[in-house]
Length: 148
Image (spheres, rainbow, N blue to C red):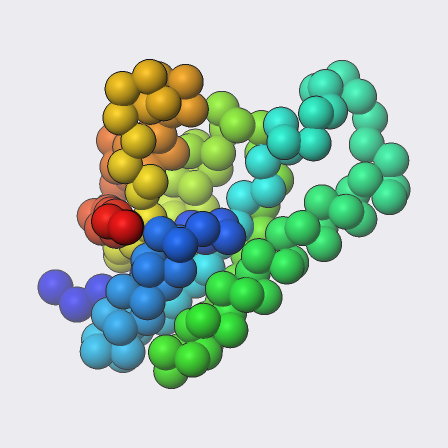
C-alpha cells in the first residue's frame, strides 16, 4: 500500500531531522504529500494552566513553533519535497493525543517520527511521546532512531 499522506512530528533534534529525511524520501518515491507538525510544549515556559497568557506570551509561542517549522521545511525542501506545515500548542501530557488527533484529522497514511531511545529512569521520568503515538495511532508508525 503506497503512503500518500505522511505526517512527521518535528522538533529541533537530530532524530527529528533524520525522520524528515526518511519521510521525504518516502513521499518522493511514492509521489505523496508530507505534513510537518510541531507541538510547542507549554510546560517548558513554566506557565500554570490557570495563568492567562498575555499577547506577548502568545506571540513568543507562535514564533517558537514557526522557527522549528521553518528549519524543518528547509530540510524537506533540500530533499526535494515541499511540505505542508502545522503548529500546535499543548501541555506535556496532551502532546501524544494532539499528534494522534492531527494524524486522524489530516487522514495520514503513515506517521514517521524520531525517537530518542531513552530507557530506564530517563524513560520513566520523561516518558516517550513516540511510544504513546505508536500505541494510540490508527495508522502505521515508523520510528527513526539516532545511533550516535
